[in-house]
Length: 369
Image 1 (spheres, one colour):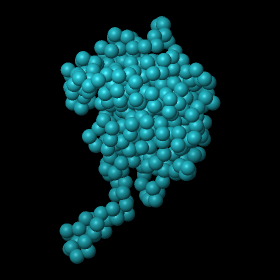
Image 2 (image 1 turned 180 degrees about the horizontal axis):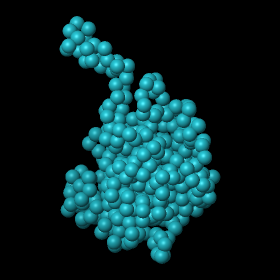
Image 3 (image 1 turned 90 degrees about the horizontal axis):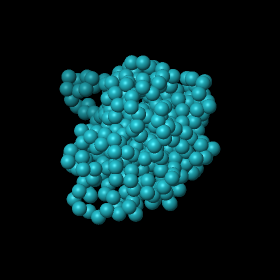
Image 4 (image 1 turned 135 degrees about the vertical axis):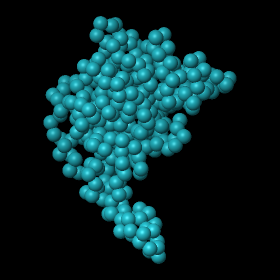
């Protein structure tokens, strides 16, 4: 599969687009010498055991692997993101690159803090025309009418070769991703469109990277559906998936559908380990844990997953390892859900506080398989 992200007029815009010359940057020495680290740390979520990090609805993770330090998403709130980064001792000035999976606020809300400490860092974002990360289109994108007088025509009938559209972060070093691509040896961006759980179609980037044990797949919100993301990843890279971690967006699904998806991931796609976060949902946490058994990994706020043939969860400093959600996790997750951006979609505060999916609340059958 040819994996390039090119726009024919890329040389005309100042925002960086993926091109072969970017390999020079990708092959440069990593921002910090961390070749020995093989781990993923959760910096933003609504459940977790860390006493020094603040829970909120959103997602962010730091990937440290193969000498690379990659930030995946920035959470929902810039101040909370800053607090959690500091509490975990993460140095945002030492990043190789950043990925913002999609345009929703609970994944890009910490960009202001990130850019305040590392304004030049490369940030991969989905390319969307007139999107929040900016855009550029050729000046020929609109239909012309030569019969009109010049004062009735756009740009007096002489438009610029390229039209650039604004962003809330005009100085950010955004790299627009237009299709799946390899951004560094062994690190792949998987770009798909999705409508699952949203009112408007969204483009979403997932990260897949090679390990000796198979692919590690990091997902933000799985709006294209987690099954399609897994399928696209295996089709593109032809390798087994060792670990899936991140938001699976099973909040809108009823328990019977969640059970079907869990079984499919385990038995058809042969996902070895799973570490659900963020928008996966409490019922899905329980059903996935039942389906995957000891291959289900607790990955709450502040958790660090150690990669290897057997993926393990490192205990927080001063705490014993706790592999499952406790009562405090459930309480904080429900509160964040009730107050978060999905409350209207999911039936509001009442359904969230009761810890049930809207389908379950309406009395649909509950089945883990």
